[in-house]
Image 1 (cartoon, helix red, strand yellow):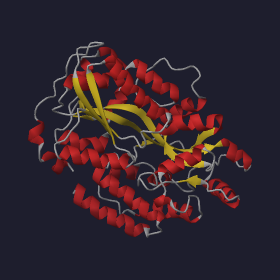
Image 2 (cartoon, helix red, strand yellow):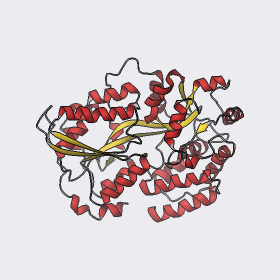
Image 3 (cartoon, helix red, strand yellow):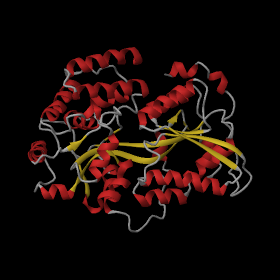
Length: 427
């Protein structure tokens, strides 16, 4: 991917100078192009409404600017394909959504995105509000290239009412977890909704299981250190443990044909008692379930090396400005606008875990928002979801490999195949 992006890098040599902060109104004109990757722009969920309000309010503040939004529906995989393909072809918007670590790195290496140090230096109040920890995962050689919008994690949510109706408790051990899943199955209820049509959701329980069974050392060596050791027996053993859950009907039978949006809707309307998902969906579940929404850490595995307080955590949903942006001032104004105190406060009020400090949030913020944030902040160890640091190419191959586990393929063969791909890409 880096090589592909580098082919036309000479076309992107210009730009990179940050404009002064824009005036509150007027002063700006022309078109600002912005690319986004929301799964369903027609949805009425709080996160989608937040973005619609951003577009409307920005246009009201800058009436002489045309904000041209291109949304790629269908989830992150579709958007990844678009952004990598278009940027490699020399077609870049002024400002766009990106991820961090290994997914952002090809754009940095190929000179496709601007360093934003000067952007924040010119806006001291905004700079003070951005959590520097959030910027670390977008930083190379002292320069950062995207501003993350959310503190994120991937958790196991549950419906408290459905648990009470079946007279089951939050499990403290793996055996208790499997027993409660069996009880839901006996009542004709699928315990955990899992949508694999977008390839990344099925990897969530695998990554959590791996951490519980093995601890962080091998993860740091392979995933973060890019060592081609996916044929280590620990990865196949984790796959076998996941297949133990699959064979026990912990998940719906049609995982790889199920859309994640169907799972989210089913969880929100009480069809499924549990769902693995990111905290970026927290607002919609609070809206749907209210006080019945809960979450719990996946139990430890007997003989495992990981802690029950380890979490899948990340800073995510970053926004970057292209090198050679056609409307530099407009792109910076939009970036400044979405990270303003007013817009960040609105995010915090509906339950998103934001990257800015101390916005004046609604005092009626649901209790679970604070509980989730505290659990992420207090994680004994934070595993960044694997496909991010592994990069877009091999990260997607990892997700596809885990998909194969749900088809009951041999875990040893699956991870041997993945290791062959890792040797090509990393060595």
